[in-house]
Image 1 (cartoon, rainbow, N blue to C red):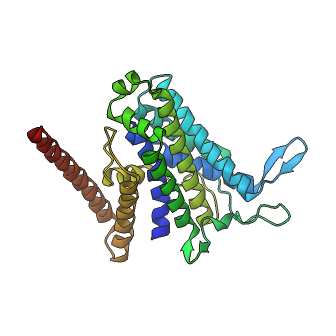
Image 2 (cartoon, rainbow, N blue to C red):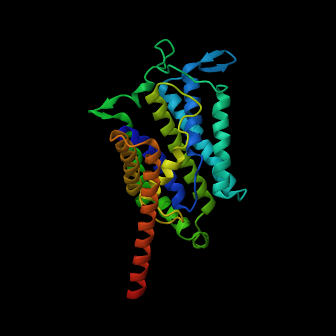
Length: 296
């Protein structure tokens, strides 16, 4: 179950960066699917060049897949900052664009058997999604590394402080000299890169790439961030809380399956838990605000 949670946690960590600035990213599931198809195509059929077909090593394929996600994230950021498109609309549109590109990449087909071959020098893709280190799945180790890096960035760096400043009060951030547009573009790049990494992990686990990879995963990622205490208005939240939210959703989903709860009731329970968590968080914030006013 922890391996399954790792994929959603990585997605949610990227989304948290965006939400902390007061934005939203609905395209992460489709970005994961696009990165999956790009990596699958490079492993399965290579890249056609004037001199013949070129096959890349697994490391290069992973880097290229993440770069695709970062590029799509950057496009989201540019649409929002330069063209003043609302984050909800920009990322909703990119959700369809990225999914359509994923389907066009293989004409709707699947790239099967991504094990590679020694002759092509592209073996080992299964390592990140299937293998284990010290008895713990590699995907979980990757989740830990991503979480630790995100915690350091948000709590120990000037960039992290700028993220909270933009989400807390964008106008004040502008007046204080923060380059708000650059911060926004950067968080969407991070979100896209995390989404691509999650898509690669899922593809490695399945051993095949198909266009509908990670469909609706963006909802679970946003739900994990909200459950972890990240305010949708921006300016408040933690990476640790997001990871905990991902574990709650993952264990809730898998746990309900293990005890034989109907699929339909699983959706009801998951939605109720999310709504209850948000209501509780809002009540806590109102209580803290009231106490602050009394002591002021």
